[in-house]
Amino acid sequence: MTDWFALTPDEWVAIRLSLKVAGVATLAVLPLGIVLAYALARGRFRGKALLDGLVYLPLVLPPVVTGYALLVLFGRKGVIGAFLEDAFGLVFSFRWTGAALACAVMGLPLLVRAVRLSIEAIDTRLEEAAGTLGASPLRVFFTVTLPLALPGILAGAVLCFAKALGEFGATITFVSNIPGETQTIPAAIYNYTQAPGGDAGALRLSLVSIAIALCALIASEALARRTRRSGGPE
Picture 1 (tube, rainbow, N blue to C red):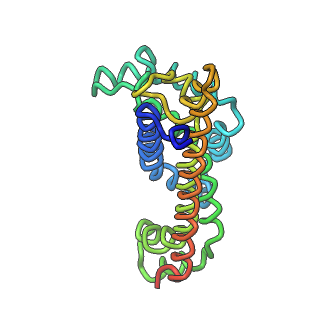
Picture 2 (cartoon, one colour):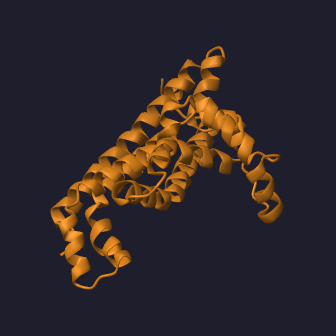
Picture 3 (cartoon, rainbow, N blue to C red):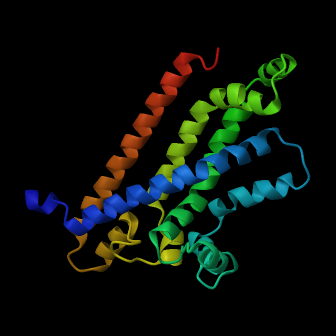
């Protein structure tokens, strides 16, 4: 019975790769997500509605469409992919870096939404008061807006991480399902469901995925509570 629940070496590889891809995707997209959230929450500019739509587009598009778009743009023969390979030797298609890119694109809308709502909830009079005391807009952002929005940033980062951890459609379309290189937990589960006698492996990896997601959510909530108790910036 214990052997039935024991993870195989290939399953450990898939778990480590999933954590690596999800972590890199979240860290890479976090600065962009914060900037986009601030622009959508506070900005008044032409094209804001278009930017809003583009940011949230991956939420409503089939993941396969997003994956195909990434393949066209960032593949070896894609406009962006060919340039990155020639200029920097950076390859995304059929590499773990491509899996991280796909996960980042799919997780970005969730990150932006959480941070945007957090910024919109901030009393603008606090930011205006800091400005009247001589703080530059950039300093106001880093010393007032960002600390007050920290619970939303934490929540958004966890949502992005969880989405990246469970992403399947865009990833498998863009980087395929290569064991040891692009085979994350969802792709490995899919392989098990397609093979006779793969129920045990699929169940093991499903339980691992649930456990990781729960741990991330609990940690995020604990951090958010601690941040709220600290009262933000003095």
